[in-house]
Amino acid sequence: MASILLRRGAFTTAPAATSLFWRAPVYTSILPLLAPTFAIGLRISIPPILSDLWESILKAVPKKKQSHSRKRMRQLAGKALQDIKALNECPGCGSLKRSHHLCPTCVNEIKQMWKDGVGTGVAVGVGDARGSS
Amino acid sequence: MSHIHHRMLGRKSSHRVAMLRNLVQSLIEHESIRTTYPRAKEAQKVAENLITLARKNTEASKNEAKKYLYTHELNSKLFGQIRERYASRDGGYTRVLHIEPYNGDAAPSAILELVDGPKDMRFAMTAKAVARNTYEGTPVHPVTKKNVEKVTRFRTNGKEEFQQVVKYFVAGLERKYGSGGSTGSTTMIEDTSSGVSIPPA
Image (cartoon, each protein chain N blue to C red):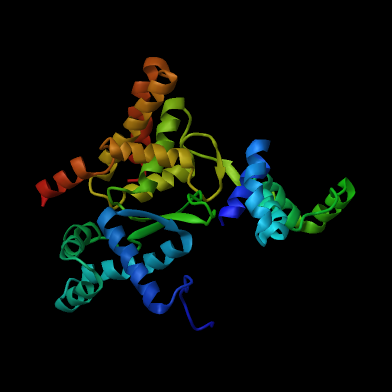
């Protein structure tokens, strides 16, 4: 393990003189043949910038841009996104909303009103109900 | 499967029942809940049955409701406040309203609410529509008129509360866009809103 670390240091940062000094015991050991492979393995795994590139290389992606003609043919065959045509005007604020759905703006405003304590019937309704009953 | 008349909701029976129980408890506690449309429709069935039990108000029905609800507070609320609220209403105690999807998977979402409760969204929405007409000085749509009748019919002090909510929204519009019909608008509030709420009554 120490020898691997040494080789890595020698390849990347260490100055020539020290690298010579460090290389000496490595060549005497069994590792000299293995050392280049370790170095390559390290070099591939190190740069994080390439990871995205690897993703795109390793995954299946279209080789060519789909032509305008092909895209139009596909979409005209019924695979295009459908337009939302069921729309109408919100009676509460006048903005466009999906029919049979509540307008989100108005829903939020009404929730705010409840927070302000209006329209919940708690202050007026229940109090009066208690008074009458 | 044509003999099964409920949605599976992608769960085992025990899981589904537990989920519906939780939904219904939340509904009784908070008066209004926001969930997906299929869940709302299933929870609606259970909630209606539970309120029917409350309206029966017998020993047997009390036991049935006690079996379903997890806490005594909710049970007493169901047999107190909620039973009184629906004393004169024959069915239709809950309402499901479609809203825009609120979660990431764009599932059809809905609000499940107790009708005539403190969180009655349709009541408030109708009042908001009337408020807009009042502010702009435009005539109220016939459908809105019908809705005003519907949402105030069984509600305690429904008409007064309706006026309050209309006033709140008119005040909001005036704050935002200035007083639209100048001084005429304030007098218009009384005219149109009383014109809306009184004739159907």
